Image (tube, rainbow, N blue to C red):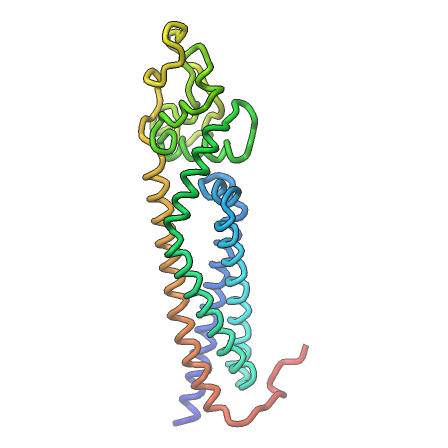
Length: 268
């Protein structure tokens, strides 16, 4: 009965670590996505926000370490090596502590992240230059066109751009232009566009005459970020539960394996 229980535990721990390996790959992929994404608001945050860059590297490190632990767990479970099982338990405990610490840190710094978002976008709008080809400007153009918003709090944020407001004719941010549903599938326009109607020489470049979305992007972007952080939190909670189960199974198997046989460890 005891031998059968150990065998079941061993192969169940193997399957568990296989799943653990896959989840580690998901976390690793998410961290890499944060660093390489150039077509969403993530690119603006990771370029301008130090804490967001740190978060990306933390995800990459935890993901890579989780994959390594999954491999060691599979090896230790199949070959019943107490040394590997003990090492697996200890490092898994450290990963769990690191995850809880990081979760608490980000929870209490959410307000600061939102403030950083506002200051980053406001500065970007203020310094926006027509035809510069800057990566951050292109990313913000993409966000405004896809989310169908303009500015941060409202479209009036663009009145702080000196180059735009010095135009004599009615000129507006191209990515803010109101469009049909089919137009969102096309690449967003960049820079400043002149309105095809009227002439602004009498009243200057009056923002009230801009054919743009008047709603700001703040609530939509924060909602998008909150939604994605919820998904990340759910994945992390799932990983934590699996980690606790893995720690329990590894200790159970380690206590049941009485003799150490290093000849079971594969030679490479």
